[in-house]
Image (cartoon, rainbow over all chains, first blue to last red; front, top):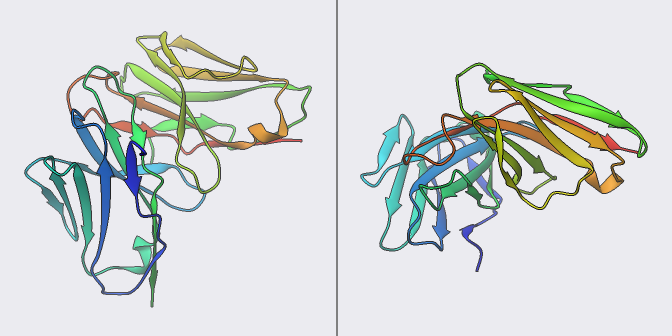
Length: 111
Length: 116
């Protein structure tokens, strides 16, 4: 089993749609969780950190379920500019900064 | 705009060449990283420097040689590379290595390397 698993997609959705990405992680002791966004031929950029209480930033909502070892990202009212690859990233230990990346989920928002 | 700056943005080198990738950050971060990313794959960790000392080498071949001249600079020296080493090389930094939850890593724009 991979340490961090994501559905690679692609997810093809129309503008204005709501889309949700899921990510599971294998290490129950994992400490920190992030969603990064990566555009084609660009560097990964931090989209959101994910907290136990869940957090929201505009159209984006991230949730963490420690019991199920599951992280989600919800995008409401999708824009064409949301088209990108979304990387689920986990730091399995507070003693290291060694991030574990999921394979990424590709989102294509169409007009 | 990223606050981690990498040069050059593109590099083409022959298998017998020696070249270097450079990275600079002025955020006062104490941890710096080199990642390698191939097409349609996530970044793979290569090296981690913490407080200017090499903390992690992910069994990277010796043809890649990292150097951290000071807390703001990170270099990756390249020698006798193979065509399969062609990839995007990403530098990153964070406040600390490890540390509290939420210690966030910030990436530079990357250096596209082609080995011919």
